[in-house]
Length: 324
Ligand SMILES: [Ca+2]
Ligand SMILES: [Ca+2]
Ligand SMILES: [Ca+2]
Ligand SMILES: [Ca+2]
Image 1 (cartoon, protein in one colour):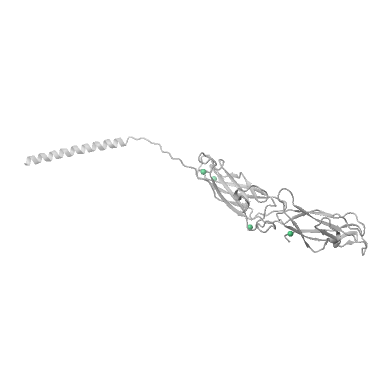
Image 2: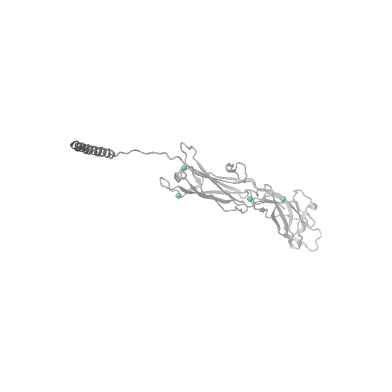
């Protein structure tokens, strides 16, 4: 029995050893197989991400006009395209509109001098393209705004857009692809007021011509041009006495009217004090000037109180005023 137990132990020992060696071989083979290297390719398609218009700055703000002078307004800012700014510059575009806020069509309004300006290709800068990792760039959009564009700071006398503003609306578009044939866009906007300018030009002189004592001149026309963006320009008239080579004619010898065929007796006598006159001159609507006229006559006294002769000169003052 004792010998049998000893043999049994040996058998177990040998079997254990054999199993251990076998396990070791399997492990070596497994490790050996695993250590034979190879490669596999990876791929993914990163889809287009729309650009963003990050900032919109309008200068100047507010927009103010000088009479008869168009004003440069610049809309500028930056954009981001996370696929690379070169998807916008040079492969896309930035387009801007500047319009009165309630105008028909709003951000897709049709361009016109009064209330909608379009810059279809803004200037782009600060994008390092061509595979660089740059994702941001800058844009600058120039507008030449007419001096008769709609005012939004106060009532212009006809439209009354004072509750509105002007909007700068900027659309950044990246490059066209098969998936996005028109490119994708990111928009942003900012607001600015356009100020009212009440201003006129008047003819440089009223020449009554050669007259005898007691004569009433013919009717002389004084043309007045709206040189701002006020749609109800009225005026205040005043004047000086006319100093002659010999003597003086009183300012009130001149009379004026809005009627082109007025009788002298029906006119308003000019005064040295500014006097309101309803001209109701509308502003320019397009490239044609907006004009109205006042009409003037002079009565030379038949029996002046002192001698009167020669060339007579004076100055009439016509002052523009908003909606008197
Ligand atoms: Ca993109
Ligand atoms: Ca950049
Ligand atoms: Ca306003
Ligand atoms: Ca008026």
